[in-house]
Length: 65
Image (cartoon, rainbow, N blue to C red):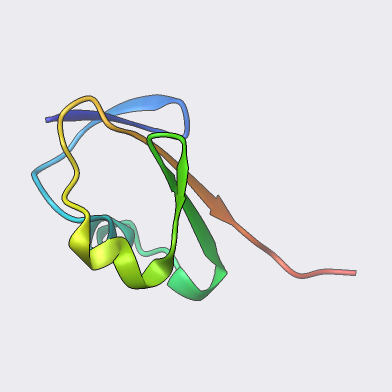
């Protein structure tokens, strides 16, 4: 299926948000996920199955000084 991640179209297999985050090797403790224009709490990531045409924004936070 085709979804858009951070403005780029990507072809992925059917999965949940949690599975996608793991597949991409992202740190869930430093990540905010927006799914179809809605911020999704981390405890819901494993319940949301991505569908063709979905829009995702994956925002990582990096500390620094």
